[in-house]
Length: 219
Image (cartoon, rainbow, N blue to C red; front, side, top):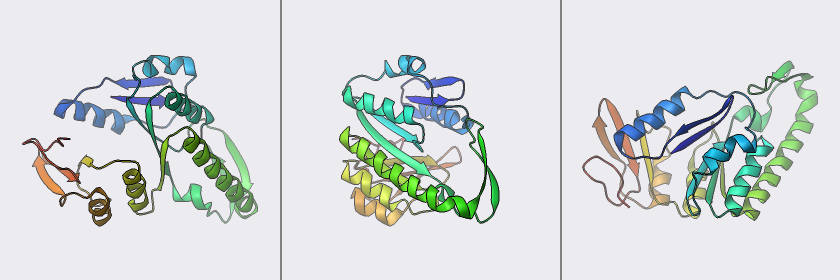
């Protein structure tokens, strides 16, 4: 299943399998837009209630919202298996601005006027401290955590997932040009990426041990 958090509240896709479920998930992700702040715990309660003890929760976010981190820690403490994948932009990591800017927070709409060079040192110091603090909180809660900056090779993320026990990655996409294929095959220890054309699309499987005739991973 899928839970999209933000904006007016929640968007839920019920658990399922097969090509139709794949298409539901793809549609929900394709139409999602960043808006609003992290929902209140009362709003999240119906979704969290569907996640049983021992279920796997994979969270993708920048984790700049404190409330999001708090909710994941609570899920982990309640016996859910949580994996946190932090996705950042290069600008968030490097703060490369060399002139005066109006910085706008795209979800809440808040803005700040400032001079890039004057703000950079303080920003980077606070960003580094926040990243270290986030990693420490996740580790203390038993949450597996990896960070990916979108201008980097995904190899470090694959390494972190492998260290956490992940042995297969299934992609349903128009290709795998953004996958570090050599690293994926080395870390996931599987066969070469398999391609399957279906309805004009390519599926890519890395590290799977066995596939059925529909190209789905059998574990």
